[in-house]
Length: 260
Image (cartoon, rainbow, N blue to C red; front, side, top):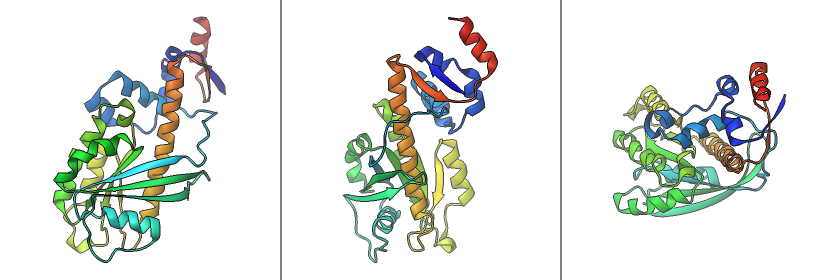
């Protein structure tokens, strides 16, 4: 069924649609931020628009955060060039680019920003967050300190001054999964923590290339989705009509038409 949401108010009063099609729930939004914007935006994410803006060859910027030697650079280089760095080299900020096809066939340009993990580089973080679309927060499964640092990075993103940053997708990535014998961070604990802050969790191995492609393609797809939703949200704020293809409860439609 096709429905036209004529006003911003009409769109957000669709409680039946919200309950039936809710997905990508963000506990972070309700439990911590608790803002009207994010509450409304979360409802917007559950609807699938019939007409999306054209995203072909769209440039998506992904930032990798994490402590030094957490595996960020190896992860990025392995994805970009299929090369495994043989020696550790401290990073200040490196950028890589690659054209990729997402699962739905959409071609985009993925820009990967590899950041330094030393405290001396933390003043650069705000500008790195502001100019990016999505984030990978990386820890090493054999380094508990790197796992405990996740909160700081996620906090800086979720409580950023710019509203559109707060809704950007964040993945928690456990690197060096091949070092299973020296694991310091239990897998289930990492998964539970990621869920508690509204993030998806992956474990990767640059050495074996386990989940390397998947994590970048998945974060890129969520970045595209977030940009689309933001465009639609802005369009709705102006009061312009927008068409959605959704199953609509007949009771809701009868109430909507009775108000006109």
